[in-house]
Amino acid sequence: DGGITQSPKYLFRKEGQNVTLSCEQNLNHDAMYWYRQDPGQGLRLIYYSQIVNDFQKGDIAEGYSVSREKKESFPLTVTSAQKNPTAFYLCASSIGSPGSDTDTQYFGPGTRLTVL
Amino acid sequence: AQSVAQPEDQVNVAEGNPLTVKCTYSVSGNPYLFWYVQYPNRGLQFLLKYITGDNLVKGSYGFEAEFNKSQTSFHLKKPSALVSDSALYFCATNSWGKLQFGAGTQVVVTP
Image 1 (cartoon, rainbow over the protein chains, first blue to last red):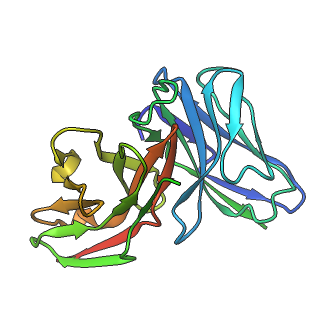
Image 2 (cartoon, one colour):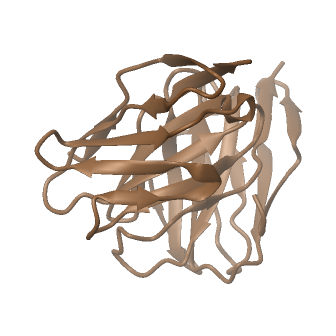
């Protein structure tokens, strides 16, 4: 997990609320990613960013939003439009050579979000 | 589309016995394949990756993986399993910077 921090570790949300998950890295990586993990489904990509002030939708972006104002930070907002937000959310980063498929992604410790 | 599959939901092995976790891939072009491990309520830890070259890749914690092009497989192996190896293991392939994961295999090592 070293070098990538996520906060909070546990988060509870009432229906209709937006919540923001924090992800910070000190690895000087250009690329950052957000994944959602549900039991038995592996990880699915929500959003990714290969450079500051730019980001792209992943496979399940609906109901989520991100920003990338600083290289070190890639916060994820889970909006009220996300119908089933209860899940484990993982942030990752990589060196980010554009289009490079050989980059290793390193993961943070995760945030477990529960909707009450 | 690039994808990987892990055919076993769970693998049970006795401590000291060899451990194998299976992964098959469906990738056009050169496959870039990764193995990660996840302990309960933790993030994923990188174990090893195959890019090119030697078909036997050595990684962290005594794990290795064998790339087999004819069988389109990338199985993870450890000669002698430890109880502490009990965890969830993910195979993944990278396509345009996006990792595609298998569903994961739960490994249970009994003393």
